[in-house]
Length: 92
Image 1 (cartoon, rainbow, N blue to C red):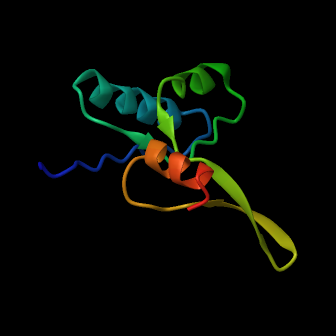
Image 2 (image 1 turned 180 degrees about the vertical axis):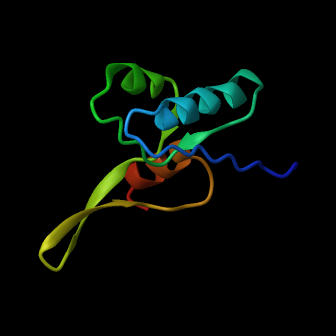
């Protein structure tokens, strides 16, 4: 298996296009037969950015209560998000 590549999208201003650029890149591996899984995206209710999530596999979030706060959390497992979802539905 080939090594993955890390890409960083930097921008100081909100609305600079960082999230949109990352989601555009996320669609490219699928076109080449590789996979990409999205762990977290805050699209800030921007319609163009929200549409870019369509067709991408996403890890489901849950809420975790900690002291007096409710925090977003992810169930980290090996494999794909689809496998994790199937395991969670089966109660594993």
